[in-house]
Image (cartoon, rainbow, N blue to C red; front, side, top):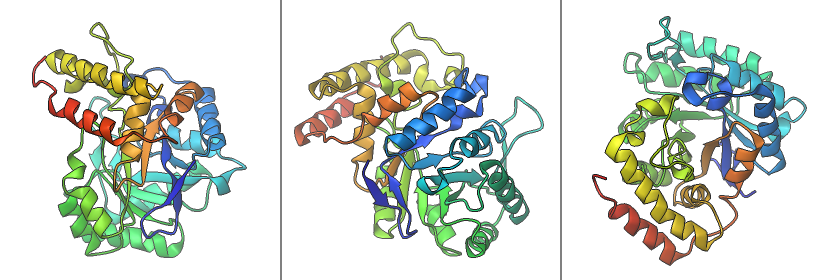
Length: 317
């Protein structure tokens, strides 16, 4: 699989990365998972030329990182590990994690991640979400210190907009950023991607399948018991509208003998300014399906047709 340089980090990453959120094993989040299948999916990724594995300590309270550490044993040199910091599980199960990018917490989380991943260096260390309570200077100086110590190789920010990214760069280098980006969510193209291109910052986007919506596997009768049950894109009139959009995209995908999901992945990894796209998988079959979104090109006329479908999508179903 093709690789690209990640900003000015000196690291090269495959155009497609494997996301491990579901491997955390939290059934209410992504349904039932099997650790053996998760390990097999990671092995399949490496066999297919994917070198970028994206994880986080919040995924199953460290379980996803442990799965990654187990799966890459003996293959560390083939893997670019991206993990995160700054989200701490709430003491109350029903509450959202709290954000903490203080020096104390980052140092604690980094050492814990290194232990779970069974490695002495994290290739890409990312702030998971902005923490408005901690000065950005404290956060960036802490990450820069880890870089100097050799505990991490690159600094990344996830879910940061242009304003916060620019503020962070006042106090240290930012090698890459991780925004949400898909056919149905293109806000990053307005300002963030051009900014990153101008300043040679790598972009590892996530969510190219829009939580599975763009796989084309759902219909009007589909129901959800995981986190999608609370997602407005999967509810009521908006869900019906999205299904109609997916059906229109299916017509284009069929011209290439591809699925809608593969079309959606290809569109993202080919978008100007995108270095790599993270796609989750719980089992090898899903990984193989996702890889089918790379290695081919959508023709200009079909890119224009996709733009037209999205522009003319009704506001109400």
